Image 1 (cartoon, rainbow, N blue to C red):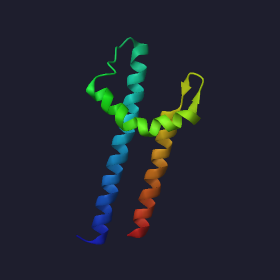
Image 2 (cartoon, rainbow, N blue to C red; image 1 turned 45 degrees about the vertical axis):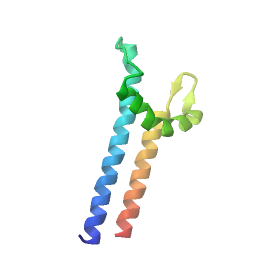
Image 3 (tube, helix red, strand yellow; image 1 turned 135 degrees about the vertical axis):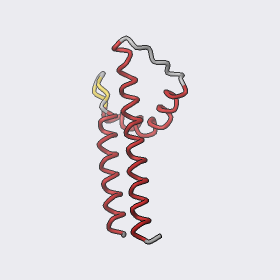
Length: 97
């Protein structure tokens, strides 16, 4: 396996991980909106607990700076930061190759 192949594999893996985390944040946002549509969401369901477990480390610190009254913009800020981090890592790996 050449150095270029290794970098391409790393780029694909990082892209997949960032996309999965992005989807986890999006799923958490949708789950938070469902009760407003009359759909009950069990916060103790294993899927919901998993979503909170993996997204809380990023969302909780952002809430201190991205919450305005009842409006929590931490998921939006998190998605922007994730995209910036993905692009930065992508660029660094491409330069290193």
